Amino acid sequence: MKSILFKISIYSCIALMCYGTANGQTYVPAYGSVVGQCSSSNVLTSLTEFEALGVKRRGTTSLANTLAWIKNKYLSYGYTAGQIVEDSYTYSGSTSACKNLILTKIGTLYPNTYVIICGHYDSITGKGTNDNGSGTSILLETARLLQNVSTEYSIKFINFSGEEDGLYGSQHYVSSVVNGTTPKMDIRLVLNIDEVGGVAGMTNNTITCERDTGSPTTNNAASNTITNELIACVGLYSPLSTYLNYAYASDYMPFEDNNEIITGFFEKNESPYRHTANDLLVNMDPTYVYNIAKATVGAAMHFAKASTVLATNDFANDFQVSFFPNPTKELLNINIGTLSEESYTFKLVDLQGKTVFSKTVQQAKQIESITVNECSKGMYLGVLETTSKRITKKIVLN
Image 1: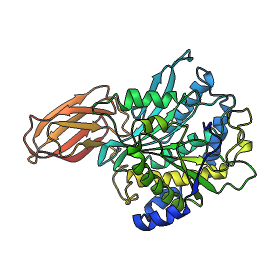
Image 2: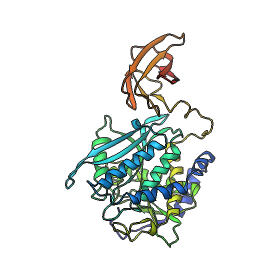
Image 3: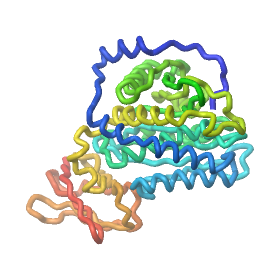
Image 4: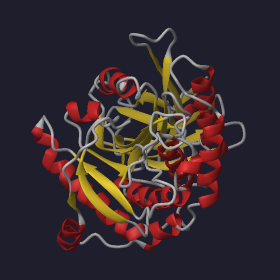
């Protein structure tokens, strides 16, 4: 949702040329290979299915059905139920709970630091195929392509509700989840995607990249840097040009108010049909959405620092299971990745082959924490066993 009609903007081509030279940001063939798998057919299918779900207003069956549809899409890509959280909340004027949907993909090196890629899935008056089925379809395609790609930083794909009524979903998430975590959730950046469908019949070849220019000002310089990196990614991984503008009136604003680093995408040719019954696929440009999806996939890999050895790593073979922090002193977190088993046994085995620690976990959560401070310092083999699978990794206790 964007409610301000007049904006002061500058073209970003100069910024891109200057920043690209200074930053040394270059095309990564491994990233380009993943971007090349982006499917225009998938994007069009998602837009069509989103539209068919109806007007997605608070408390409606259509909104609940859309959340279920998004969740089932993530599951169909190979994510597990344990990676998906439904975050419920209420607000004034809502007679029933609304839900944000959060998909978490754990990073390999910085698992407790998150790149958030977000967009809302609710609509008002109309079916919202552009505002914001377009952003929703891009989140889905990006999650699909990155499911089996290892990244150093964790990624949270967040589908917000309550945006059209006043950013209620993102406000709740920041206050209750980001700030409700001890210590506070560590966010590397927030990339918000809202209304990026363009206008049918127009030349939609430019995407607006949004940076923080508001208060508090302490995060503005970092947002400017990140947005210039986003601009570079658009040029490297899509055929689109870029237009630099300021962030306003969408789900990144509660994060910005919380002093997080934000950036975002918004259509350059602005639709006259937002918040009306004519916000439909026939009035937008699905090829434009597809091109923005390619830019988003490239940017997501850049920001989360994806592996550049995509074809030969063991990320898929070990079901994305990870143990962190590693090395550790007292606490070890076990991320079960894409394993769907309800129970497993975890062991620490020393260099002589002796099991020095063993614990069976029932009704396993996505991440379990265990205390290992009674074990001696040294190198161990961490072994996670289910009834049918065995995953091993080196663990250092210091």
